[in-house]
Length: 231
Image 1 (tube, rainbow, N blue to C red):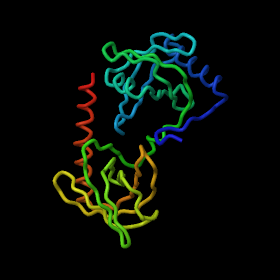
Image 2 (cartoon, rainbow, N blue to C red):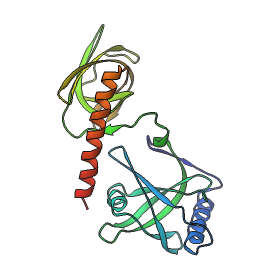
Image 3 (tube, rainbow, N blue to C red):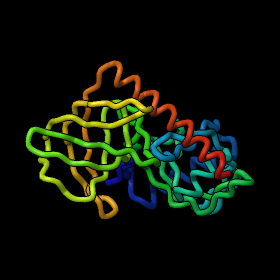
């Protein structure tokens, strides 16, 4: 199951795809109001702009999209479609995305639950190397920060330590040139890219929460600049 979405069925796969394409055709033909928006996540940041349907043939749909959306779609090879005309959100494969012309061709439509929208906190991925050390009563591990929100953080650790799930302790990390000691609980360990990813829930004071929020906002600006530079 994806961390971002979960596939859903209203009927069967083929019938759902036909129903979705029919709605898109009706939007193109102006039988339905165009309230269509596309949604992608770029380094955990939501990117969502309106789109219009230009042409429908079989299960291939041509759309005019925002340049930012096209850039992310080119990278991700998928997108979500949102409209009140759909009984659920829709996921589609990106057959082609032309950033310069702000055009995209979508296919393989299915209904989906966008799990990322249900997150309590905004989370960003980290591109720079930020060291984090977690110390509990019985063990200690060090790793690199992979993502962070005001409610939690994840680390990449080279070697699997002796930490047990639900271990509590302190996370030592430096953000915005401020050294922080943050109480945390290890929720889960998963394998990712040959490394171990440790997911922690954290407890924050108002000072720590403000610092993390400032760090996230700064990272969001960097991500948007990266996206614009890719166009």
